[in-house]
Image (cartoon, rainbow, N blue to C red):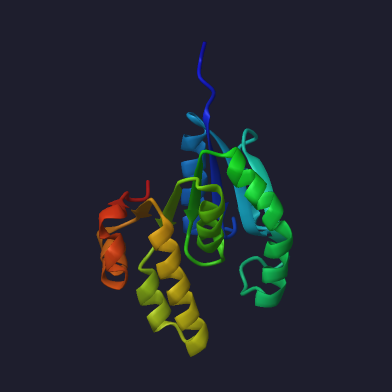
Length: 188
């Protein structure tokens, strides 16, 4: 008798047509060989959603016609709050929470779900996130809040996957407490 597959809840900001999203799809295609995967998409409506394998369950937190553009923070917060009971239910049904990408709320949602469900959280960073924030032309307060939340969320992670040594160094320089948790796995 074969054991049931372990279940992974994969949180993604969006599945539009970017390179990071294509890496996520490639990863999903590998994961479904050994795991049961549910994908929770924070901002739905992206072109690559139709490329999800049929074996993957999908949940969309908020749909948007303009998935590649900045979202209304108020509207996103309301949608997340309304979706949260279902997301918690999903977390309890899964063995692992994998949050892909730092921008778009997936990591923050993953950290809160980890606190509630006690399921291990894997944070998957796709670039030098702190460097990107510091160089961005965004609002000062918003940048500070984002950096605070990133530090908080990555400290909750059991493991952090970084796509390069530079990404790992960016995390270690900005969150020294997580150095031992970081594993470099290059994009396929």
